[in-house]
Amino acid sequence: MNDCIKDISETIDKYYRRNRSLVDTMSKAQLSLEKTIRAITKAATHCGCIEFCAKKQPCGLDETVPVLSSGSLCTECSQEVEKELGQSAFYLISLMILLGYNPIEIIERENINVRLLGKFNLR
Ligand SMILES: [Zn+2]
Image 1: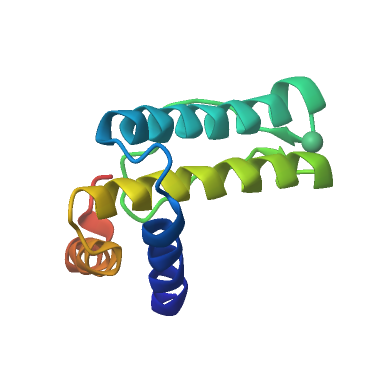
Image 2: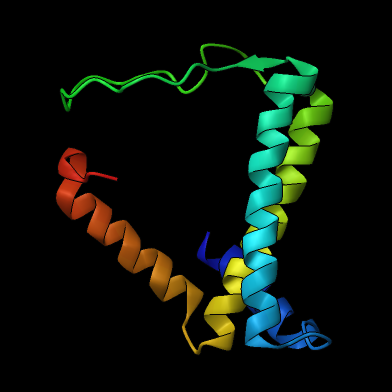
């Protein structure tokens, strides 16, 4: 995983020059995440390959709620969601680089934080 993040970080640093502005990258990151959510929503509302219902989650820490109530992404929806997730990742990593962060360190630190709190992590 670290090699993959290192590779894309180097690629972004090398080739992401055209619109290398913080404001543009922030708005593209936001837009790409919106497109990702839209692609997942359309899988349920237009295609119908997945179904999910929104309801209050149980309070118990040991209880888990399935992500989808039924189905799995069809090939077309899966490809669209994957494409949008890739672009979202690209712009998030671009933001980290533009702001001088090391994406690998950020992800590793976040992983440690989540592991420290374990199931008491309230995200
Ligand atoms: Zn579908």
